[in-house]
Image (cartoon, rainbow, N blue to C red):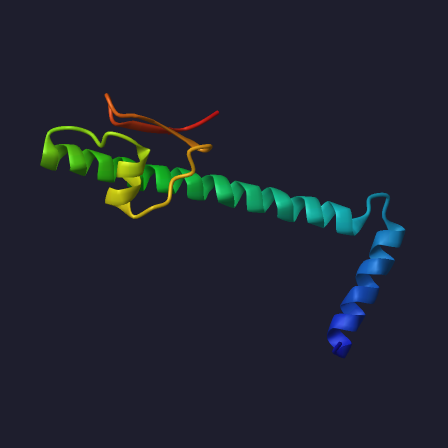
Length: 97
């Protein structure tokens, strides 16, 4: 372990001893929240991309894809059926709540 990393580690330990809150817990919770926010943003971006592909499919074929497997085939994006709902009659793809 290099000297800078060791000094940082000691500093964080001392800092956590002087605070009411555990510094590791506080920053760890922040990191987890940022990860969850990024994951939700990624899911919304993917949803928008797939919706565009569904509209393009409809424009080219006159009907919406028949099921989520066909949506996966036209987009090349693996769709988690536990995460998304798809209505073939309307072409609407949404995140499950």
